[in-house]
Image (cartoon, rainbow, N blue to C red; front, side):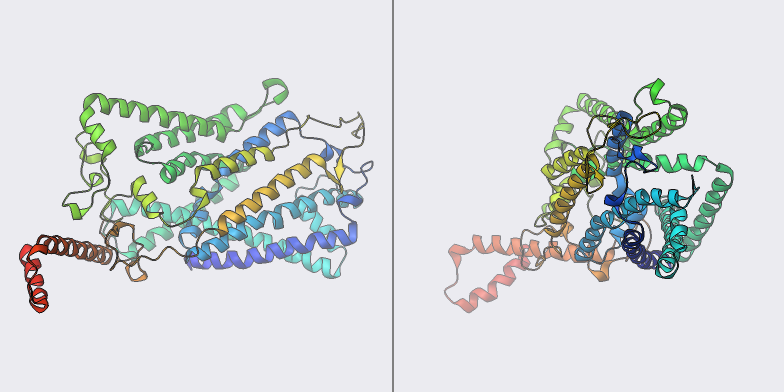
Length: 529
């Protein structure tokens, strides 16, 4: 069924999982008590109440930075692209913002109270703590048994659904970025067959890794977000850059590749067998890779610009000051022709995207009339600072543990929750409220533009109609329907401009008879054209 089927099953399974994660804490609270009911003196893992160690706080801070790349995950992007409208996208973002409170907070409750449940049941070091907790609930019978079975089944189904999403993402990337450029006239049937072959090979490789990889699977899981983080500079520059801060694609590609290599090298070559007590504070390989990524982009882009400026200062200055020019000015957009300092092989084929390149200036022009706080610099800085403040910057390992593993003195708690954990919850709640505000101030639809009445409209900023979507005959073919509509707008604007100039030139020769004026005006326009 493709992405539509996966999205539908994800929605059903997600609803069931959220429902289970709401019911499970209620069942546990009713039968075993909650955080406030835990006895600190007999709790099996009293180190949970300690403030995080210096290394843990440092890694927690790195973890928050790594999660800035969450939006760049392929299956997340696919769902964003597939949204029916801005209203549907806003609804999805609201659910995603609320999701952590329905899953992560409740999951933390299940895990911490579950420690006491497993200790009371005599279960030590289970291979799957969540499965062991569900087993204890099943022993109660009745409704807890039903909820536990339902939760276990739904979690397995959600894992399989996530795998489906990743398979579709891999197939889509290889099809759109590899097959189509090499085979631009491939029929949809052949592309579909290739996509299925890619999915089968992906499953085979994943199965081989799971069988032969052993414990290395945990390493792959540990660096997956670190690898995704290497795409963050590309997205940030692509979305927020202006003419003076835009970077060449080769600069971004070089930074990303070196970031990938750095992440792999540090994780497998340095972090394996890392001992904080001997080697010092640990670090996140993904964050270090991203730092290398940014530095490489900056250095290569600086060298490129200095090289261009030294070769042809005049051309560079013209490029930096040239504004948007379209076909109404009888010129070719500068992004459509090779510049004197840029070889033809370095010019991308953009006919499939439209008549002009999607430059940073055109992106911002398309955003006119749409309020989106995420696009404002102050909002990004605010959220970055709040994200860093979520990290509990407190004294390490307080209160200390005695030799028998008990706490030296009573920790500071709020309703059974350590005060440092309560601080995390408070800052996260503040960020959640800000996110809800930012999402809901965005419009439900793009601003409507009357393309027949507006004289200054730029046809390249108009959204495609439903009839124009998916109308390219091959990979490099232009969208004929969209091109015709945009050309008609340009033509109408030219006619209006010529007619206005003619009428202004003839203003002193206005015929005395009004009917004669109406007859002569069309003839004058036609003659001028």
